Image (cartoon, rainbow, N blue to C red; front, side, top):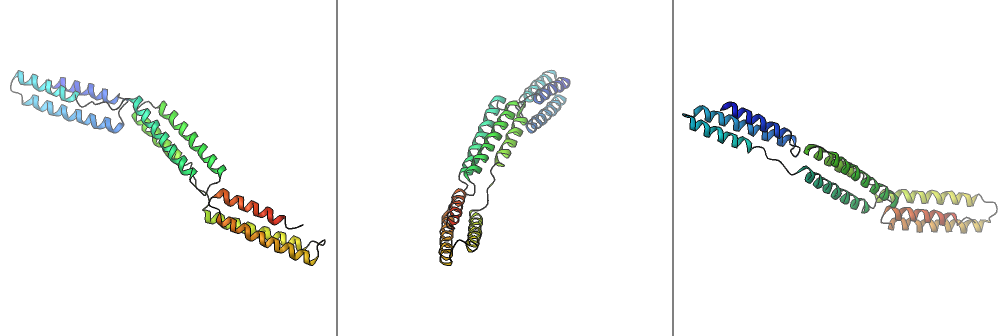
Length: 232
């Protein structure tokens, strides 16, 4: 009778090991439960005083051992759920990129493309996974790769400072060119330099008012162009 119990425990443990719907942790837990039930059944058999009790203890033991193998969600369903998790993460990160005012449109587009690429790769890895652990690993790696695509740019304050410095540098350069222009009278030089200073102030105010990276860049570009135009 105890050999029958051992044989059943071995058979069920093998079935657990080969069950692709279970993770390694779930397999270990179920196999431990099989071993515990086998030990209990053999103890009951040892204590049995007659043949009928031995048979009953053996039958109860086999039933208890068999009950320890519980398949998880079907692998296809696990894959579907994992791919849904990838899509949800990709949507969340894409929204965060879109709302990041430190990034230009071009940077946002590049990062969102990176998210889409990593999501596709993750879903392919999930589809190729042969068991529950591989599905979980592909999902976890995919989420990590998707998250890594969102890289914030310089803070808006820092971008403001850089842009205003570029305006000051351009103004200084153009004022120097005006001063060194032999075709201009002193009065013309003064008027043009004043116009440079005015355009520089306007540009810096526009930069300060800019709420995102694109607006900062546009204000800087427009300011530099307006400054350059004052030297005639």
